[in-house]
Length: 631
Image (cartoon, rainbow, N blue to C red; front, top):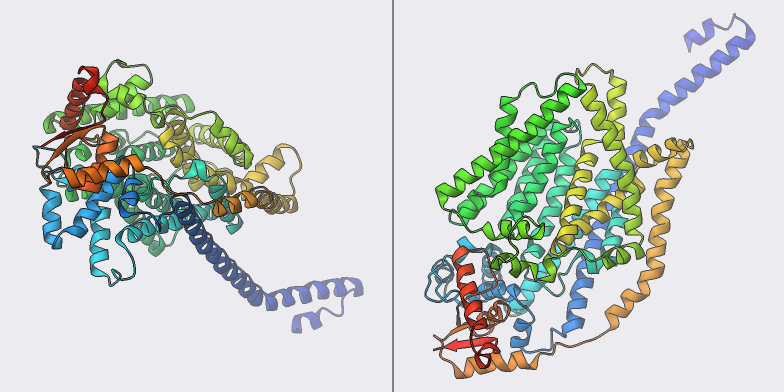
């Protein structure tokens, strides 16, 4: 105040104005700590509310799906054999190992029975822990035997409740990913609502419970959420280390629970490679993620008794090739636009050639043929291979491996998800192209700090990652219907993020010359709220009708068949037939099989081919039965 009094002798008007300004500054400085505290409290309150909603909506989704499963089958009232038959095709095969572990006199005998199994394939002793991803069944069986819950919960309920519980984690991870991208938990709420209202296209857990993807996709969603956070700039060292740990654990669990993990992570590696090449992602972070992918996969390889299919995967060859090629081409990100574009194409060609070379060398050294049926299928599907190949046609005749049906988009449009997704995708793709062109053109890296900030706002690394991720998995879903669940769930995340993102609305409003900070705030909150109200109004009555609709499992022929096998055939009897039916025979009767639905072994594929061809060449009276019994 002394300085203010000293200035009182000057002009009255100037003094009064200066005094008012100084007094305002003093008041602002006095209020600043409390303002910061208010903002911190508001952020903490928002975090608590958003986190609570995430947990609640995850649990509600889990309960909703479990109730649909109960209502559809009357699972609590049917016989045990009917419950087991409801786990159809390969689902029954996986559940049979959980049942086998529980029926073993001791855990060690149970392990021994899995490692030296001679009932899954007749006249062969195979290591099931090496051949199949069934560690989750082993873990659950150990938990059930150790925990004091046998008197209160049947084994089958412990199993299915675990899977429905994972769905709660899945939805929560989707919610968090959308929240991280947009900066508001309203985005996560919209993503979760879209996931539930598009249930037919986002999950099939309620009728294929033990399927490997139902175990794996929740961990994959956690990994995507962790990567989204990891790609944020200026993370604290402790936060970065904890996030890397979360990425590693989720990657490992995802790899352990699904045999197709390597192909999903290969697409993820392609995303990282694209972003790294276009300078949309720090190279150091990309290297960390490449290393985590390989480390997680190699650890799974050790647990699966050095499964050669993992060692010969394209993912390991690709990641090694990227790291080697990067060392050889250290000046990749320098030069003019055309010079750098040429280097980039050369880098891509070098990585591709090196990947194929390493992969072929590894497969020849290991004499690996376990995954060749997948490449035959892909070549036949896209017209590059012989369509008369038995393995390729076996996949092609399955509807699940066909093209994505067109009516899928009609269902997604009814909930407005598809329209929102295309809207957000269009804007982010244009932004990505602009940033990629900017990065390739400005290879000298001499732009000002302001320009760098502007580019970051246009497309942040975590946004760029999720953009390329959704595009690649979209192509995968369009080509193979079974893989649509990877795309549609992420579609919910990406569309909801875009509608709640200030950057997306800023780009749109600036392009039509209507930019205003208040308009951005209004649009990013009003549009999602209106869509949520629409979803509640249109789909809530239908969801209530679903929950009130009661049905019952009914398959008397298969029940009679299983009862007949149990009562009229010796325990050492061997059965041959369709792969789908034999999984039920293994689960319900414990009899030895000739072949089964897990098709990831070359010798088993040859056996299945010989069996089906011999049946096809037999007289009509021997060709019709779906099951053959050999004492």
